[in-house]
Length: 163
Image (cartoon, rainbow, N blue to C red; front, side, top):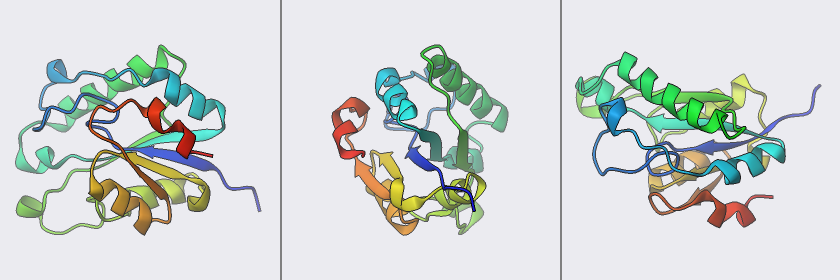
């Protein structure tokens, strides 16, 4: 059996891009945060970098899958320019008021479990950095250590919490 991988799961808004306090519905409003060096450090330590984000605005019809793809392309390109590659981006398109209950909306662990299964990840060697309690709850439920940061807090300030 092959050795398992390790990963740092990342929430999106407030962690990788500027938290605006409401849904970001247009790529023009999507402002990437400079966590390039911190994520490069994690990547160089052998961590896969995987985004796990709730995107309830899709269910509400506030933006389209196409607009979301543009935002994620902008995010990938900005980090790619600094040598950082995201292994994958998982998102929950549901909202309980519009689509009912699902297994992927944080604080449920579905998004993380998808990544763990797809990439043969060892949860006990992995982390989830998020700016909401629901991110830490999802991490804990998936067996991953949650690290709570403030919105837009530099990831460099919590690198010492990651082995």
